[in-house]
Amino acid sequence: MTHDRFSAGPHWLPAAAQRPRMSAAWWRWVASRGSLTAQLRAASTQPFGVRLLAQGISRPRHTEARALGLDPRARIWRREVMLMLGDTPWVAARSVAPLASLHGARLQSLGTRSLGSWLFRQPGLKRGPIEIIRSPAPTLVTAFGRATPWGRRSVLRLGHTAILVQEFFLDAMDADLALSSR
Image (tube, rainbow, N blue to C red; front, top):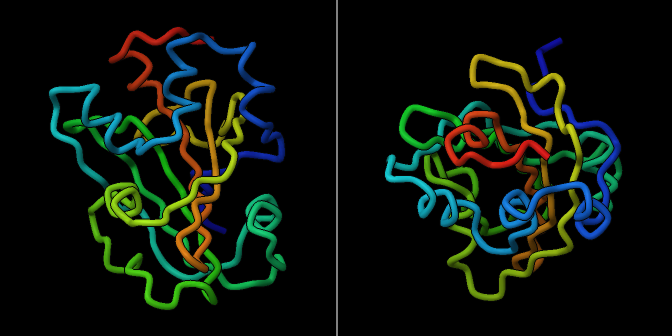
């Protein structure tokens, strides 16, 4: 069995329910409805990059299947990346989409481009509610860093394609931006 860098457990809550638990600095990052790629680029003078960790076809986790309204046995496209500023990973991200809905989508050809840089240029993109998880990924301790107290997810819809985007903020981002740990 492979190590799961993106385990998150079942405790996703609506953003408003988590708001009282976090600082204003974190809220601006976690509750933002715009492109995280654009936010990251604006936050640092270091060059933005994407480290592709995994991409392919698999089955969704139970929480992912519920979020997308899928049978847990459905086949999905999944992509796992680190969003980097310079050589430092700031965000671990996992995106999944039902394989059946990807007709015409260019997701497999993203390579080291961010999903957000493509998605947020598409006309008609709609973002569903943001859900937040506290202490998101105890197993996200890797060579890339460990998770901060927050992770977020939402379903982005582009026509008939639904993509669940899950983003886990890493301790290096917290340290570099001097964000409160709360």
